Image (tube, rainbow, N blue to C red):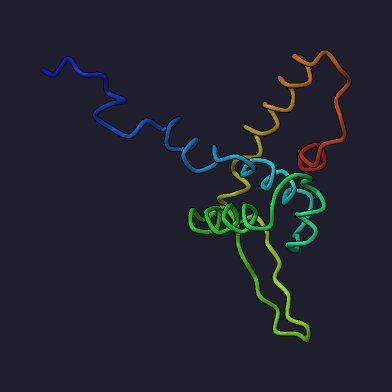
Length: 119
């Protein structure tokens, strides 16, 4: 019988999830998409400090992992909207828990959070 740690033999579920959402800005992009489908410029406005390049990289990663859906509208001018997939919505309880813990740790009143409307 092997004495190795099972998390080293198999992919650890915690590490797997963090690999999907742990990149800088990813969780905040998901937070914004809980409110509503968003266009690129809306996400840029909602996330001060993120560059267009970083936003596009994160959106492509989240799309690749199946958390975000990208819809292209063939209009003039054309535009793209991003939304959460069913898989992306599964992270909501984890984000709500992070919000609650963060509020307690900051010792402040809960801020208005897009996740509050989802519950």
